[in-house]
Image 1 (cartoon, protein in one colour):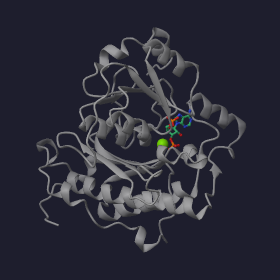
Image 2 (tube, protein in one colour):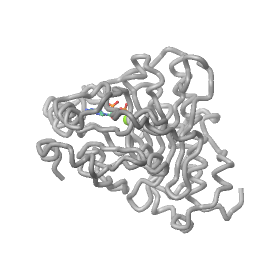
Image 3 (cartoon, rainbow, N blue to C red):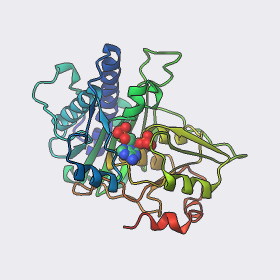
Length: 326
Ligand SMILES: Nc1ncnc2c1ncn2[C@@H]1O[C@H](COP(=O)(O)O)[C@@H](OP(=O)(O)O)[C@H]1O
Ligand SMILES: [Mg+2]
């Protein structure tokens, strides 16, 4: 690879290949049938579970062997290629010492490497970059067999702002092609998107996508106020943004604090590279710098290009805004 390729393009090009490899691991674990499910917070004392509920985390947040193995693949691959960037994974610190050699990805997406780097990223340094990894978004759907809800997310933040990333859907179209390669949606703000052709949402009705498994009173109040013609309830933050990218909905609305930075960094970057917006429910972008707190504590509000983000947010009732203070 030419030395002159800007770092941001190398990180994106490597993330595209790595996400696909991690997606294959996710499928291999499922095919083997040993999911190794653990409930992440159930070993905590009662007061800690109470605290987790207060900040919006579920005490039954599950993790499987696929989450662990896919994260080991991604973090080991990216950190060997880019030792000086910061990488934060949903599953915390895992043993990377003895991972199979074929989990270590060393190749790059050629199309991205050959692209013209957006001028503002030409001089981006390793210390400016934070990569947020969700090795398996939609874990509860994965354990329930709703496989097309599952995505592998690698988000790229520069200077605390999500600017791009990769959403890989390992089970894309699996009903007709179970052993297919999946589908990879990537984007970089200023460069554009790749791996898919953005769809256009219908002009004769208004469609919102939201959580399937984490619905509460405040989520419902926000949805009622926006009065959509249709609600698409699916699992995973990555999958919901895929629904937007494919033109199947106009907005993703989630008035809840349950998502974390690794759930939204890649979806935000890819959606914004496609001309959309992903913010909190007040319209403010999240901070993805390395010391940022993990929860998306002010919820999620995402819209596709052509929808007036600010106008739509203004339709949320005051009580919903007040429920998510800074
Ligand atoms: N109330 C909550 N408690 C725990 N996790 C939540 C949550 N709300 C959202 N999430 C996490 O955010 C992601 C998208 O959620 P949803 O499908 O409900 O929209 C999932 O990530 P993971 O599957 O990676 O854990 C999910 O676990
Ligand atoms: Mg997730």
